[in-house]
Amino acid sequence: YDKKSARELVCSLKKKGLIKMIQKEDEPFKSMGLGVQFPIEPVFEDDKIFESCAVVSSAGSLRGSELGETIDKHDVVLRFNHAPTHEYEVDVGRKTSVRIVNSQVISKPEFNFLESPLYSNIKIVAWDPSKYNHSMEQWYQNPDHDIFTSYFKHRSLKPETNSYILNPTSLWDLWDYIQAHMPLRIRRNPPSSGFLGLALLLPHCAHVDMFEFIPSFRMTKRCHYYDNLDDISCTFGVWHPLSAEKLLLLSMNIANETEVFRDGYIRIPGYQTLGC
Ligand code: NCC
Image 1 (cartoon, protein in one colour):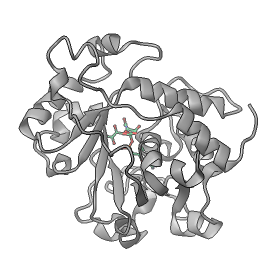
Image 2: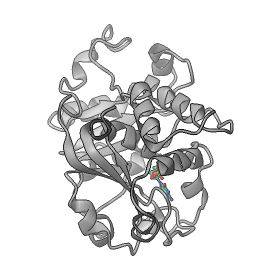
Image 3: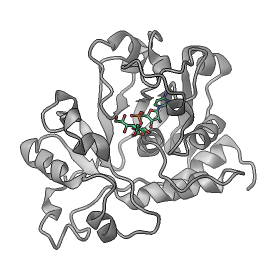
């Protein structure tokens, strides 16, 4: 372990973590005739760079933040799971370009993945935890939650919505990266959707603003801005290495202390901006 500058940290993430989606030629999907179901277009065109991107965490501390307008000024807005905008526009904005959705949300009936308008007409990146060093076939046989049934249904019901499944190797590439830059040992569980969101955007954004990923002075025990559950582990992590992710991203931040702790966002320069 050696301490690195913000630039070195971002650029070494680039070396490790170009996020991959499952492609039509990937096994076991190809042999099963399922490969054709995956979208052909990449999530973002390779050479496309947006000026500004926002990652909106689902943190309880967004409630009352009035960050909605600031968030909506970004060219790309990424959100997580079933986090709503309706009725929370003042605090979280109304624009959504991409949603990262975990396999619980895809598979559990209460989230209504196939019907809910939250999962239409945007880009969807779905993911499910695999085991470290497992092949794609091993994972396909034994996913954490059944991501596949609803995903393929969604593809046929809503072909115009580009939904992708994250290649689970990318999860562990990111985990390796986090562990390599932490002085302490972290648990072998995949990074949170929040970290995936950043890694997805860094190749395509001049900078990425992450809202309430590092808790501002509004920090609260409330888990999510959209419900009233109190659970501080949502902010600090219990299964995901969330505190390690947060410390690492705070080391990459170029926003000043007022922006981070009063306004509630960190800013991370994209790969192209840094010339990595
Ligand atoms: O809660 P979740 O996360 O959907 O939040 C999305 C991302 O926002 C950041 N976050 C959230 C709350 C908070 N107080 N502070 C934060 O920083 C995190 O980066 C988080 O990743 C997930 O990552 O997919 C997760 O999903 C939930 C849950 O499955 C979905 O919300 C659907 O109900 C997980 N919770 C449980 O399994 C109980 C959570 O561990 C991870």
